[in-house]
Structure formats: C-alpha cells, structure tokens
Image (cartoon, rainbow, N blue to C red; front, side):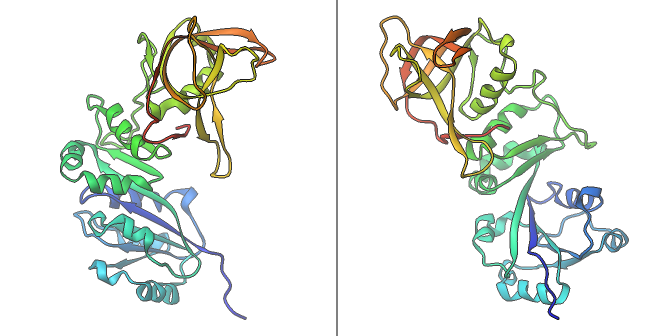
Length: 318
C-alpha cells in the first residue's frame, strides 16, 4: 500500500543575521504545542553564531539540512527532501537577502503549504536597518503573520515600531520581548492610543481595536472627544442628519468582510456625501436611536473634513 500522508506544513522564520531566528526555532521545537509524531526538517539558509544542539534535535525528531546558496533551493532539491525524509513539517530559517517574495512565489512539492511566516527583529538595531534596508523590511512584513521584536526595552519607541509594521500589514501580530524573553506590554491601557488625549486620536491601523473596545467598554469613552477616518455610509436612521463613518473589516477570513462603525450625527447644518471619506472629530454619547432599535453609540461630530482613503482600507482587530 502506498504511503498516504496529509499535507506538509511549512513554517518560515526570517530576519536579518543575529536577529534571534535560531533561538526562536530552538525554543519553539521544544514546546508542547509544537510536538508531532513525524519528522521535522529544518532548512537552514543562513549560518549565525548560535548553533543547534544535536541532542536536542534528535530528541525532538528534527533533521537539519543546510542550504548554502539561494540557487540550491530548487523544486528538485525540495522534492529530494520530501523523498528522503517524508517530513510531517518543514521549518525554513530563511535569509531575507534571498528575497522572501521569491520564496512565496517558488513552486513547492505537492502537498507543501506555507502555513506561517515569522519575522525576527533585533529592536536595538531596528532603526538602522529599517532606514538603510527599508525595501527588505517592507517585503518581510507584507506576508508576515507575526513580527517579534526581541532585545526590546521600555524606553524604545515601540508604539512607533508597531505602527510601521501595521501600516504595511494590518493583520500582522507584533510582539515585543525583553532580552530575557519576557514580553513587554506597550499599551498599559490595553489600547494603542492615548485615552487621556483630547481628542483621542485613532490611527487608521487601530480602527478595529477602537470599534471593539468602544463596544465592550463604552463608559470609558462617553463624553470624550475622538478623531478618526471613516467612509460615509447611509444608516438605518430615517433622519439624513445621521450617517455611519465606517471601515471594512475582516472578522475571520477573506469571505467574511463587512463594514463596521457607529452612528454619527453631523454638525448643525452640515451635509455629507455617501461613500466619501471623512476625518471626523466627535464627542461620544450613548443614546436611543431608531437605527439601533434602542440605545447605542452615537458620535456627535463637531467637524467633518473630506479626506483620501487610508493606504490600507481593510482593518483587523489586533
């Protein structure tokens, strides 16, 4: 009988030399959630200072295959890996100078699927690399599922680092770690904006978080002024003095994209155009309205300025 296996999951871990890729992989293969009965093949495309412990690799049924040159990473080479090891899982410690975009475009053996891409960043050198190799950072960020800034400290502009990633890839999880591996919570209030500001400024990439937090904790916002960007949509209210400054959101998958937003009352004598983008500054209230069939959040706009759509129109919730 032929050997029948389910598809092979491929995990890509990339980042510049000495960014912590090897340490991350070494930690991950030891975790209970990452255990598997089959063989894990680890393709190492870049040699750093830290090396893998052969005994640990053996214990966790992991085989290392070194790839010296970008040109060696061919379909025939990968098919040879499949034939020799029949891996249940493949991890690729990838050199970003070989182009992450090309890796995603590369044809893989039948049944191999890239499940996740993790980008490791040394926070202490981020500013230098991001300024001098910006195109590579953008390329790594575009399809990343997670970006881990390690060796981070609280006095670094971590919120700015997160914002830079989210502008390129709103759905990417951004994690900050101290040198000892402890996580840093950069938002003590639980949200990535200043709740004490007047007005509270909601960046485009944070609209999804704002929408959820306002729904779950409206008392923290009632009476406060906020400013954000949204697309004007007609509400269920029969009164044309109301509209919904909304954004499209992916709630779980590409097939589940919908507009989210709350009712907004235009300034006295003001007008609005359907499908026009506005920068809205408003006071938050909780009121009865026919659009809600009861009580709900209502923004009382003091100003509405026509504006261009954001660079990335789709919002996420992380």
